[in-house]
Length: 205
Image 1 (tube, rainbow, N blue to C red):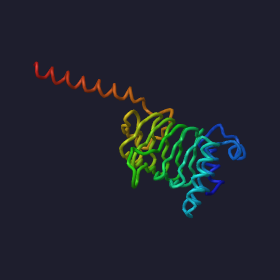
Image 2 (cartoon, helix red, strand yellow):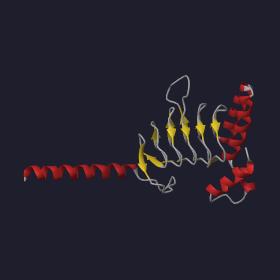
Image 3 (cartoon, rainbow, N blue to C red):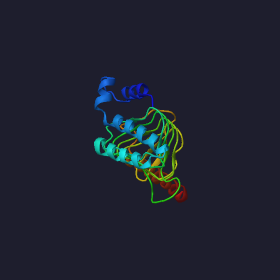
Image 4 (cartoon, rainbow, N blue to C red):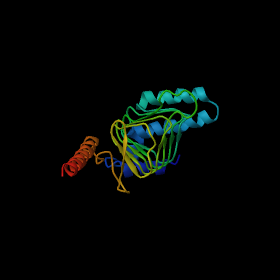
């Protein structure tokens, strides 16, 4: 792990971050990542009990639970972090951003790949749940409180319960400016009603 580039990533993604020293000393998300890097090294070197002990200690001190077997790329930013759970077979690419209470979890499968894969530059909003061995494509956004159970293409935004994909054509969205899923459903229903009315008028004429 390159600590300097991770600190720069925090500064880039968190406007409240005033200095690298403040991030290093006070940000529990960064502390969770540092604990994970050590625990992951131990796990890969067959010190699995010690790795799990360290990951549990990290959970108690940071509020973030990352299984040491998970695979995490460079410059991950965990903003706030409390309540985040990352399962054992999770894979996270480079330059990802996770907000509080995110779950990267399983769906009850007990063997093999059980947890999601996040591509590069993926943002997951607060309270979102991504469950099962699914893939979230590069540059995608998962809105706050979405529940995602299916693969998501690259450059997409997912909203709602269950999660549905909204294409954004490269527009960069964050967890505040993602579309309202209820409004999207109402818009689709309105369009459907208008189409049915037009069909009815054609039949009557």
